[in-house]
Length: 316
Image (tube, rainbow, N blue to C red; front, side, top):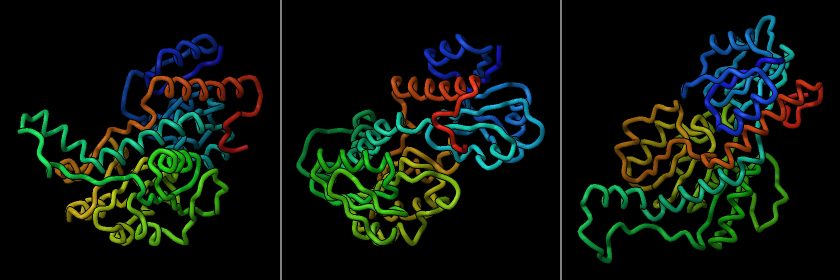
């Protein structure tokens, strides 16, 4: 029986399905594997089901490896060096599609929480500081009919666009490397600066890592309109976090964040700000979604074991 390492305690349905097929080791931890630990795992197991935070970098993927396949739990794979895996002959996969709706739903959650100052309101109530309704208390922003700018019009970006167009009658614009044939009115703008300047709400959905690292810096953030809302459900490294903090400290914009540059570290400067909603990377945190992600990753491992192409292969 082939050996399989699960680098986290995934949902029980995933563990049970894995144990029905493989000799499974489950790591009871919440932090990611270091490069050294990942290298050891590649030497010790036939297959690995990993997730973000596990550093399967070029150093880990060097040498004569026992592992034949690394299936990553999640759509993002900036923690996994695909080129190094290909050079080492290790098959790799991710879990797209099943995360799309859940992540788009969370983007809408952050838009509404930031617009209606819901985080501030809940903190007020919990602290016993609410003295009753009055006409000018915690006045926020109406999103219906406003203009949404999407950075990265892939699966998640399009799912966000559908929700805001059909649900809130928002005008949709986007910036993307190529034009997209989408099933709703959406305008592709020339560049990021134009999108930032023309949008009431901006949502970032591009993949992390690589050329997208630091994509949104101080200059782009400065282009946001006064009162604009900035939401990131992509990866923390896509945004210059220090520049975003500086812009938020002026008080002229609001933000909703589910991801951070050095997770799980969240800068104290962010936690002290009232005009930003901070969530602990909840993008796919629904049981049905996490089960589907795990089972999709497992399908790729089974395909490798049976000598079939990986359904969600990151290289072929």
